[in-house]
Image 1 (cartoon, rainbow, N blue to C red):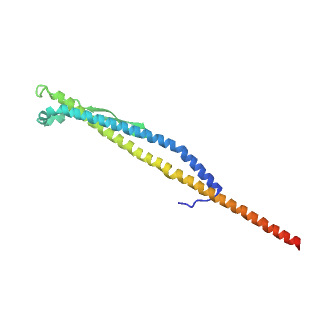
Image 2 (cartoon, helix red, strand yellow):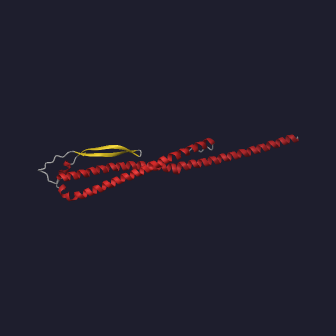
Image 3 (tube, rainbow, N blue to C red):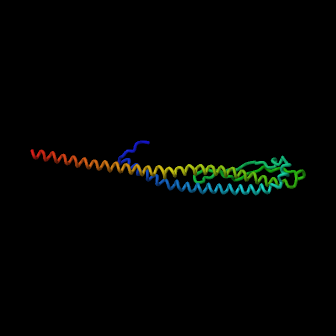
Length: 204
């Protein structure tokens, strides 16, 4: 770190820097609060999807043996496309799941059991829920990373940059005060010596 200059210009620079820090800090704090809210919202959405998944798995449990007896069930539940968009949340670009589209299965109702259609609907719903969870996890991660960076910046301003500027200003003021006192003392001393010289000349 460069040595602090104890000058009036440096005092002015430190004062201006302090003003900037105080102006930027509220914006950073507001962003931090927004990110905290959005992280909580993403976590709540994840919990909701997890609860739905658990409930759906509970409904599927009685069918486990039936489903395991049909290894070709996956052929009836095939993702055609996952539609994603992006949104700006508190300055962070995050993914938004708009739809999970499935290929329309061809079902031979004479060759397949009556419960197959319900099973396809349930497994499709489960697949959609898991896709939502992956997108929400990604959203939570992006927001959490930005929150971490913003919180670090807030701490940097609050605990390092503002106190340092204030301390620098204090030290410069002391140095300038000492310099002024010394200058006054030198002026008085010079004046006293001048008076002595004049009185000596006058006495001669």
